[in-house]
Length: 541
Image (cartoon, rainbow, N blue to C red; front, side, top):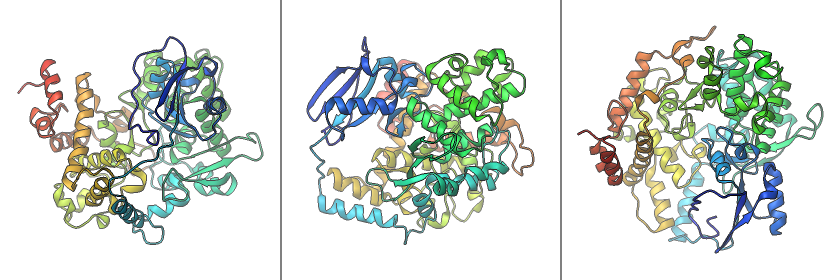
């Protein structure tokens, strides 16, 4: 899209019949897509490229799930997806099947020589041989799938709808087995220095022979594996492949089916409710069948297509306590009972659970943080209590910085998984130099972080305008009330959680109800928000 000359594309209104948008440099057309409606993601991309006679065209599209307004449907490009908070539903509502782009103009930067020098400096910090961050090597070889073993060994693995945090059969879902038996070649995102954060895979034999895809992540083997009590790796790969073909968010699918399985085993759901499908933990054949039903809204899948929160309200009978959601969005495998920063981040995220908004989930290693930096953001580096995973100390201040930082890096755009642990997670002088040499607009360290803070406050203000308050910044009852058997970790007490929430609001300059104050909005030059808040009587002094 950038090569075609556009920074963004805004699509307004709703079509009477299915369409797709074709952008060919300066030429923009809205074309009929009736013949594409009902097609899977791979089918849609292939048909569009054949129609336009160019296999290099880039396509963003939705599958049957988005067309059927299934909860949390993302937008896909191949095996990559974005907008899991329901952007695919919005495209489906607009009857917009796809956006196809051919860009041939390239991109000009303000200072090519300086820009190249700055980018070399960025790449140097990510060099596999010299990087101080040990995760760089792990992600370069295994991708995020490496954390399945780590989570399991540290009692952080969501299993059986989070009733357990470890599982002896998780050994059947680890990265080593995936690389050994199923990976065909490595994959890296566009311009990424990591050689193999993702991989292409193919199942060569057995029940799911011929299944192929890419980008298996830790979330895949947790949300579609341990969370459902399924340790059959080929079945998990098949389920992800189905989600990617049908346009489903696998976190929605995993946590909603896990809710249904727990309710079924507790007798809350019966065969009459499920249409005869026996939803027992570990039954991958039932899970695969239900995934298809969700995408096409058939049978019991029509209820599950609404997501765990709404489905539990439809069913009732006490099933609500087993739906693991925040702001209507399903969790995404982050270990909340064991990492308080992650718990606070999930609760306060404006779009519901999204760890990219404050990644990484664990506490940063103080040894990787430049001297004096922690003092700038109000943290005493000598106080090790801050860096304890289950301590409430300074978690509000720390989360504010992590969220502001992530907003900056993802707006550049940069990859939050690549850039946040070592130097690149704290040296905003370097990011400012990169941005200045690219755009010609001067950015310094303070201005960049202020930009991140402005983004977070603008997003929060949107939610406030729509009625969201402190009561929505919560965690599922299971996280706050239930201890885990055979684990050293306990539920987060409500007292500790509220203490961290107060700390976060205070660090942000918000009210105790989570509303940005007029003083903070003025500081961030968000006058339009102030005017809206005054009109709606949200600001009261």
